[in-house]
Image (cartoon, rainbow over all chains, first blue to last red; front, top):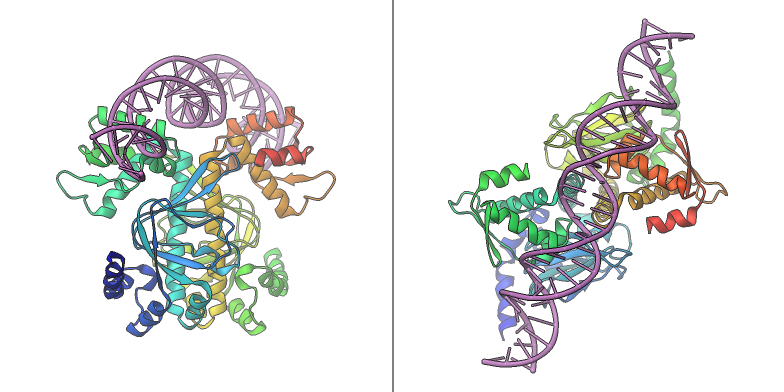
Length: 237
Length: 237
DNA sequence: AGAAAAACTTGACTTATGTCAAAAGATAGG
DNA sequence: CCTATCTTTTGACATAAGTCAAGTTTTTCT
């Protein structure tokens, strides 16, 4: 069966995966083995819910493949996207330290697989491993900084600028910055991106059109070619 | 001299202060002594800069008295307020774990005093004290959650609603929720609050007027009386 | 392949909110 | 106590962006 294959394949390369994740970097072989012994592989079909706001907290996840959106539903029924989770990002670690239920919803926006780390076991591991504590603190600090920047974005700039920032960030992540014809492949729907940059699909659609008219980007389905990186940069400021 | 007085007075009550701060709660007497031996009392005059973006990281602060704003200046010269720091809040801890300079500016918006904890000494203390690590993780987690909510606010709601949320939060903090005539005393200028809720003074001024016209609040200088808490709550949703 | 459901685009309209300008109030220093 | 500075208010105006509605395109599923 295909699934079994994927699973064993993953097991073979887990070591490498762990080492590329900030949370577990700087751990010894032995410590990585301990970490690995806690991990449980989970698969999620597209659109399936991983956890919901208010669910009893069980532990956190480390995305291996696919895409996950972390979101909340506001009182007036609108969806607010907090985070777009990419492979090798951890999610759902926040409640581990305060005994509260999950504070947000997590849904797979594509066929995904993730490692699950159960709360209590992981906490014991942390008790014994200061390195993991410090790494996790560093990870939280980085995220706090990132959110801080996002707030800045939301208050001080317009949707076009926020999208420009988003594109450049994505470009960096994919390493396609230096190519002569840089492009970004959208891994999630435009609706989700719109939500993430804090606007609605209609406005997002108009932004794409405007940027195309000005020959800054070229949209072909889910691929966005950046035809004028300097100007995109200046929009992102 | 007056300063000396204040200093010794603070020293006498530091124990209580530490115990009321989440970061240091659950520490033993002995551990608190260690913490205290690192702390250095600092005074800041109104409008003085505590640290600036890009400054070499030295350590973090714990505000005892006064008020501090954490902010950044965006490319186009506008100020984006990230955090309004109140007594017993810690600030400037983020870079401790990654060796980067201060990522934001901190300025006293009133006569303030704070305890300073130097980075390296505090890190050694953390090495020895898992409890502090876990408490700090919990603190970071709480702040991440808080920022998350703030982002939600900024994207999905209007300035009036954000201000209603702000007022209710302040009311909670001051414990004046149950009084028959609840009120909030603004500790910072309206300009700063406007920035914090993501708008400009003019809009903020209009919001105050509108809420007064609707007999939801009554503004008297720096004091805001809440005359219709249920309706304010429904605005905050 | 073909139908049903999503996802996306486009247009017309409304509105919250930012900007500029000017005046009124409040505050602090000499 | 008075002047200079800073904060807050008010008005007029411009505009980014949300909403509603109706298409069009793409994806998904049988």
